[in-house]
Amino acid sequence: MLRLSYASRENMTPLIMDPKLTYNNKFGTFRHSDMIGKEYGTKMPSHNGRGFMYLLHPTPELWTHVVPHRTQILYIADISFITTYLDLKPGSIILESGTGSGSFSHSLARTIAPNGHLYTFEYHEERAKAAKQDFERHGLSDLITVECRDVYKEGFGITDLVHAVFLDLPAPWDAIASAKAAFKQKRIGKICCFSPCIEQVQRACASLNEHGFVEIKMFECLIRNQEVHTIPIYTVKDAVSKIKVQQDKKRKRNEEEASNSKAAKSPRIKQDPPNLYVSKTPTEAKGHTSYLTFATFLPVLDDEVEIIDKVNELD
Image (cartoon, rainbow, N blue to C red; front, side):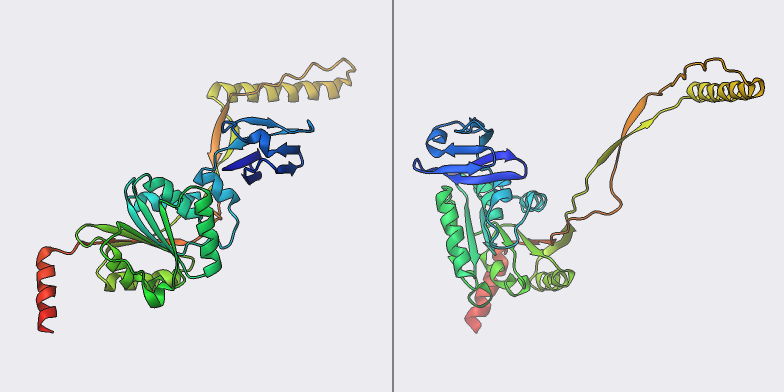
């Protein structure tokens, strides 16, 4: 059983429960045997009383923060946008190429559960094995099939099956022909290419257009923080009153200097106007991960199938 220990947003650790083990951090010692059977969200005090932590459910969002980085991973901004734009839902069948650390695969599995399926391909054998072990430990084996394959040379080996395709490859244009064959041929499908460089986007768009995809679009998700400030709000009455107070202070100061008076100064009265909360975005938006290129696969009509069959017979 997998659980996440939460001490702070910057201090989360995945734990696989074992009654014989203990977990140690700066807040103390925590026995796995004390955690087993506890509900998610439970506040766990340390065995030596130095502090506490929370036990959290390993949702895909939290798993993205703690997943071992075998490769660069996708984060929530891109994940949510891709999931929505590919029109994924329970029951969808998806093809993913570039499993990597499995961060996106976990989110896909939750989206298509309980009766969908994800076919994910990884050319690096060790990464494929590690991802498969993660999926087994997390109870996702029924939803995810992992295969180690060079899709550039061997293709995907899937035809007329999937509703959507996601390509996280250095050269996605070399896999688009095989991806096109994997789509259900009699319904509309969606494809997304995840590319860090604009030159990759250009070649991917050219290949998508060449293979008959339509509605080719490219997006970039940037995170912009909102900085909240307060500013004073002056009405005309407040402004006039403030000017009068300043003039009175100046007049009294001049009179005191002229008469060299040693009388006690009158207390200063500060009038604070009401404040308004405003937000401001930074001039620069940092956080580029990759460009997201989307396209639509059009279904093959029955008339087109008949024409193709006749051409094949003539050949």
